[in-house]
Every structure is written in structure tokens, then in C-alpha cells.
Amino acid sequence: MQLEVLDWAIIAGYFAIALGIGLWFKNKAGSSFVEYFASGRSLPWWIAGTSMVATTFAADTPLAVTGLVAKYGLAGNWFWWSWAFGGMLTVFVFARLWRRAEVLTDVELIELRYHGEAAAFLRGFRGFYIAVVMNSIVIGWVTKAMAQVLQQTVLFDPEATVQGFDNEQLLLIAGMLAITGVYSIVSGLWGVAITDMVQFVLAMGGCIGLAIVAVAHIGGVDALQERLAVAFEGQDPLAYLPDFSSAGDGSGATIPLGIFLVLVLSQWWATWYPGAEPGGGGYIVQRMASCKDEQHAVKATLFFQLAHYCLRPWPWILVAFVAIALHPELRAEGADAGAGYPMLIRELAPVGLRGLLLVTFAAAFMSTISTQMNWGASYLVNDVYRRFVAPDADDRQLMRASRLASGLVLLLGGLVAWAMLAFGVSVDQAWAFLAALGAGVGAVFILRWFWWRINVWSELVAMVGSLLLFSMFAVLTTGKDPGSVFSFCYVSALDELPGEYRALIVAAGTLVLWLIATVLTRPEPDGHLAAFYRKVRPSGPGWGPIAALTPDVRPDGDLGRGLVCAVLGTAIIWLTLPAIGAMIFGDWGKGLALAGGAAVCAVVLLQLARPRAHVLA
Image 1 (cartoon, rainbow, N blue to C red):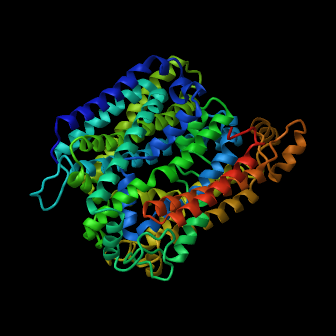
Image 2: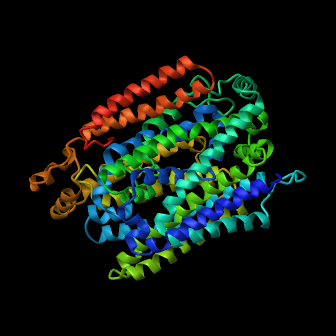
Image 3: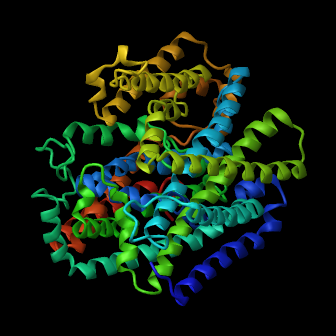
């Protein structure tokens, strides 16, 4: 793909702005440890919320959506739309609790909620595990996705039969990582959050521009529907809900009813996944902790959920549909369907838009990398270094450690990215692996806020049990090859079981294990639980014995209202998504009816939410 002067000017201008923002906030971020990792707890909701949205828009996201659409049609997106209810629970139930806890990281909550050496071990282990293992995998896969974008655009070789990765690609990726590393290490969360604002606007503008160009190229939405009907062999690729009457083997736009129910009914509580943690967690908690107060934390997470599910998907989906219509071979078995998105950049984008689209992916890539760096370093410094190595460290020592830790996180992620490129690990494989590995721990992360009886052993057993059950499935399904050391224990029925069912079995088994552990072990000391209850003031009947010990504490008492608000918020998302799609494809009656339903839910939600300290004012 040939770039002209205008394209290069757009690209150069973007990188100059990113570096400029980093240098601008250098002194402010370096003034204290809390400024570096939590922006001094002074972010307004619109900056914090936009930063959340930008972070979850990574270079891999449009590629992953294209892959889901190619296999299942529009309904394939239920893989991530199913997390909407969990996100709305974070908004209306957990956001205030997290902000009230005044933690810097989500694992810091462990010692606030639990007591003793086991709690200290769990905090340190989980902080190290997330920062070094899980964080590196995320950096690795988004880097792999960015390399794929470059491979299909500026570094595309039309004469090559197989598009491989070479030193030129690795140097470009290394350059972007270096620029991201500079502004992230120098500016802390202030620079990350403000840069996220710019990156999100650029990324959305580029995606919308490509969607308009792509649909116009194919002849409009009517021509697109005709081409899609051929590509999907009679199935309805625009069906919002899957066609449950088919087998769901990938031959059409369909998902089996059982898998759909597993996604919608269990994934939001069962699976821990970066950006969609049950009860909130990860960098979402970091942004909430950085907000000015509880109201700003709630508004930030609400904006994030609405933008994440309602604002962003359709430009990606339209481009995915056009890619499949122009290249039906993307639906073939073993095809790299995700490559269809950058292919259209190369084939359709005019001068100027090419540069903007490369900036779009660079911005999406860099916003995620910068967050992973700052977030991962916050665990290493706050939950490992300050907690166990240098508890008396002053701000100067902590700042030095913070910047070193940020660089270490980037280096580890870069090594994992190199390994994924070298050994051909796909983005989809890494995505599915992380989702499966986190299956089973979500329930304890939710219920620890509302049931006094949960203790540190509940969480330890949940984490270990989930890993063991996941490993058991891996052993029982990798012995198909007679030469495998596990061939003696191969179970063909489990090998043929869809991954969603496996994740549900892991979650259910883990739930049973940690409930048994909870019953068989002692509760946390009353004094420690009372201190947590006094600070966080959680609602619900699960704190009855502790509430009796602290009669002066007045919890919010609106857990039920929060649950209803979460249901209404989810309904708004699930009605708005098909409403937008119907209007795009000319079915205005259906679109307006769905939008009207979403509006009714929004009015009721406003009325219910108003007494809760005017959350939506």
C-alpha cells in the first residue's frame, strides 16, 4: 500500500502529539506515587470513561470482530456482548464500592477484605501473576495483531504467496513500542488517560471513515445484503439472535442454543477477563480509583459501557461484512478471517484516509499498551515492592521503582509478542486461552462484597481450582495423537465439547470447590470484617452478623435497586445494538421500535437511579 505525503504528515503529527502529551505531564506525574498510578484521584468522569473505552479498543479488536462475523454472522458478537450485564453491575453496584475502598489496584482489596499471612500471600502472588503472566499475554496478542495490520497494509507484498513476518515489521513494531514506552514511563496515568482521549477520537474517526468508504464501494447497503446472502449460503448474516435451528458448525451464521445460553447466562459471572472482570477489576478499577469521587466513578463506568457496546461495534461490523462480501474465501475452514479488515484498508482507502487508518490502529495499539504498562507496573510496585520489599519507601523511591517496573512490563510483553510471532500463535488462540484460564473465579469476586462468610481460602481455592480444572481438560483433550504422553487418558467426548461448555464446567466445578472450602475453614476475624464493612458499607443481607456488631454504620440499602438498574442498563444496550443495525440497513420501523424500547428503559432507569445520590445528574 503506497503512502503519500498527506498520509505521512498525518502519521508524523499523531506521534508528535503522543510524545508531546507525555512530556507535558512529566512533572505532574512524577510528583507522587498516587499521581503516577491514579492521577492524584482527580480525574473527571469523562476522561476516565473515555480512557476505559480507548484501552479496550486494541489493534486486535476489529480483527477479532471480523473473525466472529465471518464464522457466525452478526450473532457471533454475542461472545462479547454477553458481558454487558456484568458491566452494568459494575456501574450500578460495584463502582461506588470500589471508589469507597480507596485502593490503588484491585488486588489491594484482598488485604482490606481478608486478614493474615494467607491474604498477604494471595495479594502478592496475584499481583505478580497478573502483571507478569496475564499482562504479558495481552501485550503479546495486541502486538501480534498490529504486526498483522502492517503485514496487510504498508508492508504487503503482492508477489509473496504467504505473507510472513520479517525484520522490517519487527522494527516498526519495536519503534511504536518504544514511543509508547517513553510517554507512558514519563507521564504515568495522567499522560496515558489524556493520550487515550486523543487516540479514541482518531480511532473512531478512522473506523467510521473506512465503513463509509467500504459500503459505498460495494454499492450501498442493499447490494451488501445481496452479496452477503451469497457468501453465507442462505443463512441470515444480519440476524441479531442466532438461528438456533441449525447445527452451529460454522457453515452458516448460526450458534447453537446451548452455547448462546451459556454465553448470556453464565459468562458475565463465571469468567475473569481483562476489561470485563466480574464485579469490576483490573484497569477498570484503576480508572475508578482515579476519579474525583463516587459519582464520577459511576458516571465513568456508565459512559464506558454505553460507548463500548453501543457506539463502537457497528463501524467494525460493516467493514467485516464488506470484507466477507468481497472475499468469501475468508469464511473457508482455516482461513485467517481477521486479515479481512486490514485488507480493505489496503484495497479501498484513498489518500489521506490511509494515513488516518494507520493512525487508527497505531492509536488503538498504543492506548492498550500504555495502559497495560501503567496498570501492570502498579501491581509490581504497590502489591509486591511496597508491600513486601520496601514498605517504608518514600515517594522518590516509589517513583523510581514505578518507572523501572513500567519498562520491565513492556520488555516482558515484547518478548511474549516475539514468541507469538515466531511460533505462529494466533490472536484468537491467545484470546480464548485467557478467557478459559479465568473461568470459574468470577463468582467469588462478586460475592466477597456481599457475604461476610467468604474468606481468603475461598479465593485461593477458586484460583487454584480453576487452574487445575482447566489443566485437567487440557490433559484429557491433548492425547489424540498416539505419540502423546497423555494418549492413555484421552477422552474423545471432551475433545469434541465446545469451549463454552468446558468453561461452564470449569466455572461450576470451581464454584463447588470454593464453597466447600468456605464452609470447612474459619471466617475472617470479626474486627477485620467490621473495619471493611465500616469503610465500604456494602448492602444486602449477607452482612447480617457484622452489621449487628457495627450498628452505627448505615449501608446504602439499595442493592435491589442497583440490580434492577443493571437489568435496565443491559436492556438499553441489547435494544440499541439491533436498533442501529436496522436503521443502517433501511428497516426504519423496526429500528425506531427498538430505539423506543431502549428509550423507555432509559427513562425508568433515570427515575430509579435518581435517589442514588443523583448518579446520572
